[in-house]
Image (cartoon, rainbow, N blue to C red):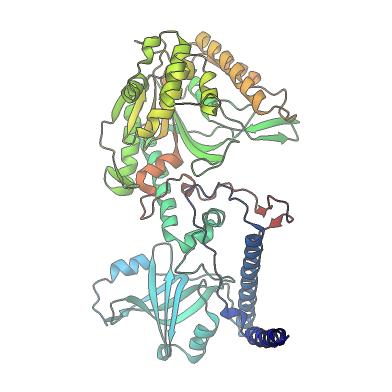
Length: 606
């Protein structure tokens, strides 16, 4: 009993202490609680991999943490909204209409590096603007670091150089994340930091939420992809990736124009999804009362331009494919596809080399790129090997020796790859109807990942190249190549098949294959039943009978090409295509517990 009384007494004391602690905590202003982004350690594919559901106890903790974070944001927003009202009450507009800027931060950093420590360039007046990313106050001095599109610079704010009202405004109303404009002169501090000696300033945009924590930054992969604007503020190198990508696209356009190509635009909404093997997005046109498809390729309409008399055409455009999402695949992406009459795949290889090397020189000034610790040499000429020789080199098997014996080729491939009978790879291999299909399965599984340096893979089997011209020397092959860099395909081209009879036969076979696959994919989906590609291919077959000149088409993925130009050559390079895309497609912002323990919870964005 004595022990019980002691336990009750200690419990009462603990309860009183907890109550006092809670009362003391309630007096702390919400602004004192920093906004924290919860860091989630993950691999490059974490953005597309659904994490396993946490145990019930962990879910409660995560819910409480999320609730606390939301409360912090709301408190900070309320405080900053109050500052907006107070500024307007004092006659200041916190969202300015215009600011006359004389210099960017880079122009100042480049133009005044010669100043000595402690030297002031008082005879030059500068006006600058940018977002505040750091702020430090020391009595009569306030230091701020601002960032604009070109870089960063320090603002040196001294109380004696500002009016008393301005200095108080500087200390009371300005927060990290605000955009500020400042006038003054240039000086280099005693510690050697180039700074703008501020004589006047103005709040241009009052931010209602703070930036991510400076130390941790924004590291949550999913949040980085969803909130690109915050990602670019927290990680300036992300914007550098997009700038480099823009340079690559610009250089491609310059190159194509110098070669005499005409840029054209073809329909994004099409009557049927043709030109590639992919599942399309379907929409409905109300006025026409018919379904339309977002294009999965630009190919067929570009060929019609060629038939019509334009001998050199190309298009840089968005492609839409209703398939998987990963760090290497986005449902919409950018490609360049080009066609040139009176040429073949040999000259297209030369053109591909020229375009890529031009892009490398424009973005790096050299023909070597460091990609994830591997030096990629873009010096010409690039390696050129046939698919058969590369497979033989990697496996020791000569698939030409099987003749027409498809089963022997399948057994050899299955033994080589060590496939289990029930595996999806084994099922895919078993479905191969020709030696060419088996060869391609082995190539994709064994050889592709080893093609690190630029390599043209030549002479694909006719069974997997329905639009390519038959090889002029080797039966059963086509004059087609694919370009590989870092184990990835970044280009595909061939001498175009222009024999309308042969092309019609290949199209009819392809239609049967496509519709059979589509029927299997859409089994049970009434919205796609009965749809096929025959109508559109009939139009294209009719076009073929008008006959265009022999030509060389090429297609390249801009997002892949940009990556190998070194858009990614950053200290922490990721093997990802999504980081090349400003706004990728993401899953809905809903969390539904797998065990049904709670309702769907929408994630609130600021």
